[in-house]
Amino acid sequence: MKKIFLLSSAVFIVYLSFGQQVEKLDALMNAYAKLYKFNGSALVAQNGTILLNKGYGYSNAADKVTNNEQTIFQLGSITKQFTSAVILKLQEEKKVSVYDKLSKYFPGYPKGDSITIEQLMTHTSGIYSYTNDRDFMANEVTKPTNRKAIMAMFQDKPLDFSPGTSWNYSNSGYSLLGYIIEAVTKKPYEQAVREYIFGPLRMTQSGFDFTHLKNKQKATGYFELNDRDTITAPVVDSTVSYSAGAIYSTTGDLYLWHKALQKYNVLSKAQQEKAYTPVKNKYGYGWGIDSIDGKRRVAHGGGIHGFTTNIARVPEDAICIVLLSNASDPTLGEITKSIFAILYGKEYELPKERTAIKLPEEKLKQYEGEYEINKDLHVVLSVKDGELVAAPTGQKTDIIYAEREDFFFVKSQEIQLEFTRNDKKEIDGFILHQNSAKIHCKKIK
Image 1 (cartoon, rainbow, N blue to C red):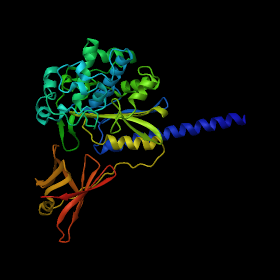
Image 2: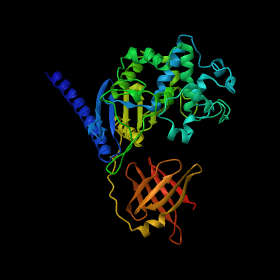
Image 3: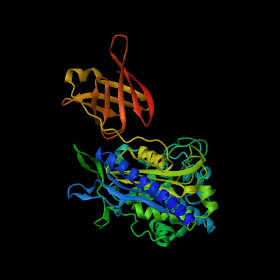
Image 4: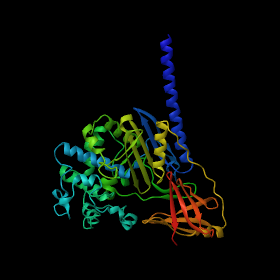
C-alpha cells in the first residue's frame, strides 16, 4: 500500500508540473496577443505530448473569425526544409547528388560548373536573391510567373562571392532546387513534395496554391492588425515564392512532420545528421542550427506578405514549437525563446504593457533627424500629425511613443529607443533596446 501511495504522489507531481507548463504557455501567448504582438496559432509539444495547440486573435478581422488549431497559414521559408528533404530523398534513390554541379541541370548557367546543389541548400552559392528586388516584391508578387522569368532576375547578376567562400541568404538558390527537382522527377515540384512527404504523412491541410485555396479555415494575411490599423496584405502567388516559400499548412500538419522526423519515417538518422550539420553561419540543409541546455536545436523562420512563421525543435527532448502568425508579427523569435525557458525551467518575462504619454509637438521635433544603426541600416525620425514616426531603410514606417521624455517605444515590437544627449543637452543619438541587446546609434543628420 505504501508503494502504491508513493507512486500516486509521483504521478500527481508530474501532472502538476504538466499543468503548470500549460498554464504558463497559455498565459505567455495571451500576454502577447493582448498587446497585439501575436495574432495566429501556436503549438508546443514535448516528449510526445502536446502541451498547447491554440489560436489567438483573428484569422479574418473583418468577419470576426478567430484563429484556431485548424487555421491554415502561408509558411514562407519554412518551405525550404521540405525542398531540402526532397533533394535528400532523390539522393537516396541515386537520382541526384548534393555535390552535383548546377551546370549538370542548367548547362548555360553562368559559372554553373562552380556551384553545387549543396551550396544552393546552404546559401553558400553566392547567387543574388531575387527577393532583394524591391520593385518586384512591391508590385509583381501577386502575378503568376514562370521559371524563365524568375531565373532572368538573377542568373546574369554577378555572384555576391565565390561559391563556398561565404554565406548570403538566397531565395534564388532554393528556387533553383525546385527546378532541379522537376528536371529529375519529370513532375511538378508540388507533386514531388506531396508524393515524398505530404501524402505518406497524411498532411492533408498542407499545399501550395494559397491564392486559389477554397477553405473556410484559410487565414487572411495582414501587414498590420492592432487597435489602430488593419491593413490587409496581398497574397504572394505560389509561382513566385515556389520552392523557397510557397507551402501553406497548419500547426497540426507541421507537428506530423516533426513526429515523422523524430521516428526517421521520411529522412533517416544519417540524412538528418547531415541536414543538421552547419556549413556556414549556423545553417545546414534548410535548417538553422543552434543549441539549448547543451542539446542541439534546429529551427527555421518564414516571412511572406501578411505572414510570419517559426518552427523550432530539440530532437533529443522531442520538443516542437510551431508559431504561425497572419499579422506579420515580428516577435516570434522572442516568444520562442520564452517558450523554451518555460520548458526548461528557466527565467523569462511576460511582455510589458507600456503606457504612452503625450509630448507637445515642439518637444517631439528635437528628436527629428537621421540615425545610423549600422552602415546598411539608417532610420529617419520625423514628426507627422503630432506623432514621432520612424522610417527605417527599406522598411515600413512606424509610430514610436513616448513613455517618458527621451525614452520611446514601439507598440508592435519589443523595441525601445533611449535618446542620448551631448554636453550641450542636444540629442546626439539613441540606444536601441531590442532582443536583450543595446545598440548605440549616432545621429548623423
